[in-house]
Image (cartoon, rainbow, N blue to C red; front, side, top):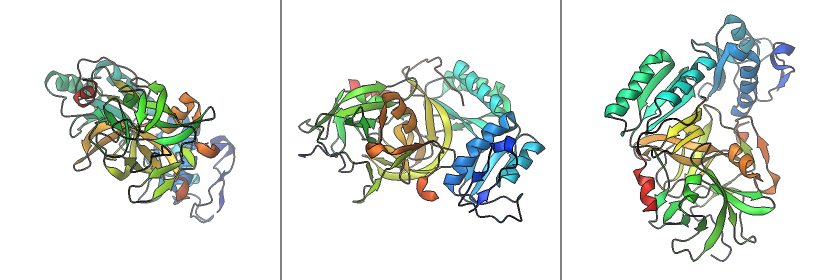
Length: 403
């Protein structure tokens, strides 16, 4: 591998209801509507919904309780807590949905979970579709842990719902077992996105991967060195790392391997939004797809490894997929962190937001790709913190890497 290349598998203008709502007219070129029906729900592209949704949520303040994109009906759904807010949403073409709980109430419940029920094998995020905090408990949450979790969630009433997740929550780093991916310290992970940092070629991967080793290679034997970790975060406020290429003449394109002999060019970065269709590429399971189901997720991998600020999805992943790319169209969205289940039975998988990782390490996509905070797919024209830990839960797989 002479070039140290890692890729083997590896119109209308819609006026706002008032200047006080959005401050100006919002251009929605792909909204399919006629001027004669201003209060009828319109159809939106994911991109347009991603632009309007955050503005509506911000401007409606405590009269809104989140939003999401319904891909089946192509509608922007905004949770509201009053008739006035509902009317404002209708006037912008959105679909208002009356809900019971405010965003503040749901975030308070998430904080209570962090303080009183952060047991290994649990994860939670605010779900605008159900207007609740959804808690997932893996197979290790039994006995006293289950009793503790149900006691706390029971006291929080219908602001919280508890669901079982298959398998155990664990970061998806994998042991060395062959294959073409990135290797380091007896671990196997996946390259996320190639980037530029301070004029140097580098790539992003998962932070828990680089805890196994600071140096990474393209082969198991280490005969084809790739680079050295320059920054790493795990656990705490994220799961990401920056690895700088040893050979700065290495070919490092801004592409994602689709594992069918083709690749997807990545030209920009986007924030995730609930309902956003995404794909994940990883060295173990190749390409899989799903949707974003939650934001600002907290996951307790056990052993004191609690990570906040993640993206929750229904995309499957398995050990060795860690660090791999999550993308939507040509937009980079996330880096695979961990989760439960597998690509046979399905599961819950969490991702590090790429926007946060890039900002933390001072990097950008190659060729000056722009960052987009809309949470939209460009081609498609719960507060939480560290909590108490009482065991190593479902992290045994990762711990094996350090033996």
